[in-house]
Image (cartoon, rainbow, N blue to C red; front, side, top):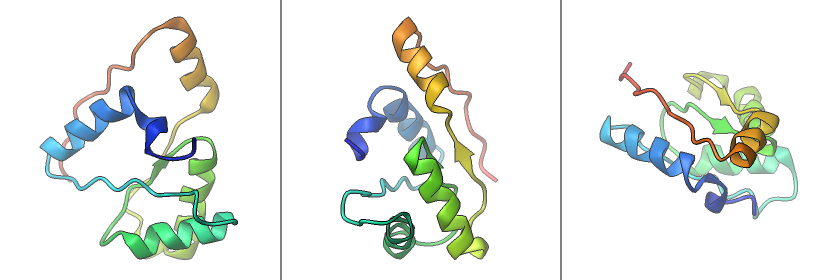
Length: 103
């Protein structure tokens, strides 16, 4: 399930906030490549402009590889801790993402 289904719930709310603020959201399909380097290369090839990759846990590794492959395209990096996400799901708590401001 390493695809957009992973981002249901909290991720959907975050996507709506980002879209409302005028940011484009791209879901990297990590199911088509066999290596982290290939996944990062596909992400970079299929998206345009500056990126702020967001991922956990493997997605965070892919994001770091994207930084290594194309540092000039990376405007920031968000890495979610798996343990925190799992604890939040188990406790039934929902994230309360803060609104983003445009750069």
